[in-house]
Length: 482
Image (cartoon, rainbow, N blue to C red):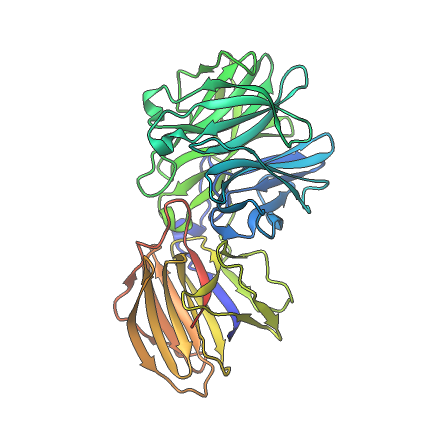
């Protein structure tokens, strides 16, 4: 076990990242927040997003204005007993004085299922009610909706694209306890248009005037080759017939944002907004799918049109983020693997992270493709290496480690470790390890024994382009190995 003190991450002040942008699509959730969902409860907006294989599962963010957000807690500090990974597409809702969270996850020894959790207040604690829909090919992207008679229904996607088939969007009545389904499911629509390619998914709904409106995403969601876009459909009855807008897709990639989709409509002060995700075309998969907000209106034909507002500004990039580990509890900025759940501790301003041969880590979202991070490693009698690095997942990471006077840079690719370089230093010193990342994937490592002068370890940047998993971004992290 090694002690690590005072991690500082500096997001370099690149002009294209710190300057406000004049655009209709406003960045409000920097970093990896896929599939955002938002609801108003009282005078506060609450949001959550996909965490995939990072824990704690599903952040609970709060805001008064839909723009400035703060993480309050998490839906699942510990994993639901029935699920093991792929915690995707949460939908937060408020109904009859109670908060509900509909979510997708991989069932142990099974496939993707839709689960439900509930709480008396949005910050929790949440009680999990387990899975309610588990189709053979998988069930994801649930959204609750009441009809004109007040009956509760659940809308979701059958994940048939995973086996090369069309993707029907289903609806079925749900009991008021949210523990079971009633009656027979019915298909609303499926991927039938050329632009939708192999899937439609991420449906969210609202009622306005005579119509129910469905926002949905289509085509390829994730990664550098994504092709996602957003469509809308409408119907006078929840059960249809549903008419897709001839002007679809209504949101597509532009000069700044790539592959916009999978979000939730929300009302504020009599105006309508859509919160969704997209990739920044500069930092791409390295910062992941970030949370955007755009206003929309209803035109004379009763269809949705997005407002072209050139006065809005992105939330600014914080110049520095520092954790001195001064609290007994790890801050909400940190995440860890759903497969590890490390028994870490914080003592006297230092983090103690238990080790394993594979490597244990905690990670912090990256907010730009250009940043540097520094950590002090405390000298302790230990058989473990302590390090700082960039993390894709358990099997893919690049880090600099220190152990008893030795510094090593180790690359883990597909679970295979390679020592890229090794350096002996004065053992009695407490070294500072530093990492500088450019363009999301060019990684340089440094060390310092006095806190002022840093020595570059690798003369050529290490290529970390292999690190991001297909469905999430990289994290800057602290690691313990041995």
